[in-house]
Amino acid sequence: MKQGRFEQADGGTLVLDEVGELPLGLQGKLLRVLQERTVDRLGGTRPIAVDVRLIALTNRDLQTEVKAGRFREDLYYRLNVIPLDLPPLRNRPGDLSLLAAHFVERYARENDRHVPELVPSFFAALARHSWAGNIRELENVIQRCVVLSQGRRLSQKDLRWLLPTEAFEGLPEDPPESAVIEDWTPPSAPAPRREAAVPAGAVVADPRKPLVGVPMGTPVLLPLGLSLPELERFWLLSTLSALKGNRTHCAEQLDIALRTVRNKINEYKIDGFAIPPSQRGAEE
Image (cartoon, rainbow, N blue to C red):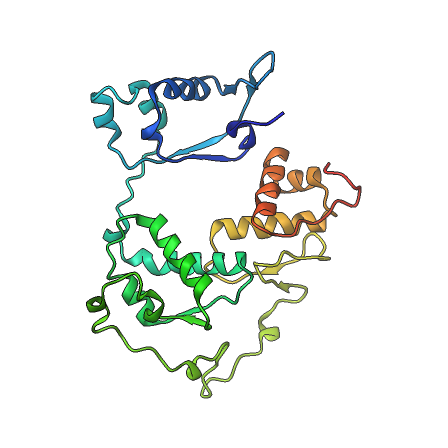
């Protein structure tokens, strides 16, 4: 039997995009789920309980919609627990570089391509666009650039289709491609010996690759600047590997719900990450 969205998100997070567009009839059903914390299963005899963290997104002023009778007031106050007012992307140019780098890495991985370097003229050109479509538009632009790029870096040349010709005047010059050297260390500053800085018994880890064959309790060194989702994925999959794929023991070790472990594993599978198999041949 096919599960509904709330059932699929049980133990995790459900994002409702454009919640302000919901018809009044569906608003009433959503309110009932939020109040009773149960959903009706198709063909079932009784509602089933769900535990879901809900994030509702909208580009409308819901208070105005409530006054106009297009949005239920009781649902508005049910959703408006921790409001976050996110300015449009054009008003926060400082986020462009972080978001662009994130989408570049994501779509390079999804398309099995080398992660291109982003040079100064690329960021400067991005900042000259109005971004009427906000983050969705930026994501689509970056995906197109990654898929169509023939080189190992993205520059203003990859955005010629996006902006008018005059928008490229006065952009910063990029270093020659021959000068782009990965893992370059200035000759005046010899590369430090990493092994000397690693405590005895510790492991230097790549956050993109969960640890395999490393026992529980081993000290692990990770780079600064990782996002919370990256840290969460690394620790969950590394712990699962150390516990020979046992979902139940992993949940107990990390002090989280078993359904949360299973939901996260399903999420990582969809994103293309390898999941440590259970040596018992089943998902405990």
